[in-house]
Each structure stands twice: as C-alpha cells, then as structure tokens.
Amino acid sequence: MRTPIIAGNWKMYKTVSESVDFVRELAPKLAPFSGVERVVCPTYLALTAVADALKGTPIHVGAQSVHWEAQGAFTSQVSPAMLKGIVEYVIIGHSECRAYLAETDEQVNKKAKAALAAGLKPIIAVGESLEQNERGETAAFVSAQVRAALVGLTPADMANVVIAYEPIWAIGTGRNADGATANKIIGGTIRATLIELYGETLAQSVRIQYGGSVKPDNMAEFMAQPDIDGALVGGASLKVNDFVALVESAARTKGV
Ligand code: 13P
Image (cartoon, rainbow, N blue to C red; front, side, top):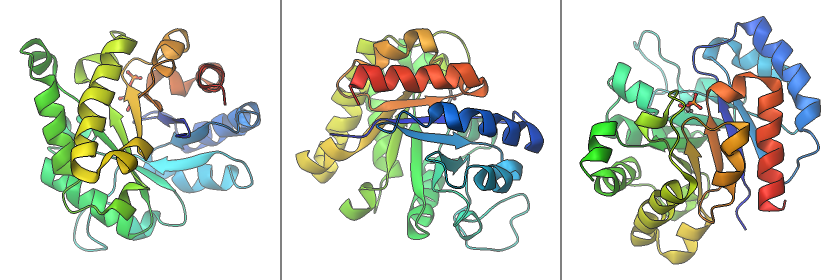
C-alpha cells in the first residue's frame, strides 16, 4: 500500500513570518491524519524558520528547487548540501521552472541525482501543455519526460522518488483534469513507463501525485482513483482550512 502524500507548493507566496504563522496554525490541525504524508514547500527564505516551527510535528518540509552542484559560482542557486538537514523533499522540474527558468530535462535529471545523493527526496514534476494535449501528444510527451528525469537512477533511488503529474493547462487555471483522465495518464502512462524501466513490483511502489487546480471540492475525485497517490497543490495549500480539507479528504477517500 502506497502512503498518500499531499504537498503544498507555496511558489512565491508568503513572507517568512506569514509562513511561520501559517504552519503553527496548520500543524495541529493536520496532526490527526497520520495515514497521509503531509509536506509544505515554502520559499527558500522561509525554509529554516518553517522547519524550526515544525520540529516535533509530523509535517515534513520541502524546497521548491535545488541546484545539482555542491557549491560554486552559481548566483541565486542553492545546493543539495545546503538543504540537507532542513528539508526532506525537493520539487524538481516544476513546469514554471521549465518555462520561466529554462530548466531542461537534462537539468531535471542532474538535480534529481544530486538531491538523492545528498539524501533528499525529489518530487519530480512532469506534464504537457495545452497544445500538446489537444494534439493528442500527452502520453508520448509525459513518458519521455519521465524517462529523461530518471536516467541513471537506481531501483534503490526510486524508493525515495515521488512523481507529480501536473498538466500545465490545469495549473492555477481552475481547469482541472477529471479524475479518470488523470488516472489514465498516471497509471497508463507514468506507472507503465516505470514498469518498463524498473519492473512491476518497484513501479507499483512509487508514489505518483496529481497536481493542477486541486481544491477541497475535487480532491475526493482524484483520491478515489487507484493510481493517484496524493496531490501537489498550489493555491489551495495557501489557506489553512483548504489544506486541512485536502488532507482530510485524502485520508477518508483512501481509508487511511
Ligand atoms: P494550483 O493548485 O494552484 O493549480 O498549482 C498547482 C501546482 O503548480 C503545484 O505545484
């Protein structure tokens, strides 16, 4: 049984003090749902303060990106070694990083390898554009993204990898994929690709999230799908009550 994982990607929202206030309110409300892994991903600036505020709680912390080098002349970047000890997870390959920061498949792969080598758990995001979707290219494109991200990752690495399927056209638009369609890509494409790469048993153990306009009122539709193991959530994770409702819905729908 795969433990459901709900991660809040806060993107470029919340100051340090807002982030800390938020998790102080959130943590006790999320505490009862121990069958769901709960993760918050604030900006780099707030990571230390949020991690400190969450010490002793069951809520995990993730970063929103990472560089692949250990250190060096890479202005603006943060290395895996710098995140180690502060966060457990790191989002890699988010479509906003791919689109606005020109992150390539090759860089996603280098980041994933570097994160794993440092003991961090990557949440690797993949997903097609609206145009690709309308041209019927979703399965081929997403499968290729998954393959490219995982080049050289060992079966042991895969125990620490989460994949997030986030169709770009569904992010921040209020236009979510329906549960069955998302499950078809997650099970029929992403997990099928993992089966080809790593075999059935390992592929069945990897957690795959859906992301894109996930809200409390559509969460159960996604969590009811057999191949969807949680959600990577933007907007709704910025509100305490919505975040709690998402986790509560996942716990109830998955029966954990
Ligand atoms: P929204 O939930 O705001 O659509 O964002 C999804 C996302 O990009 C999470 O990484």
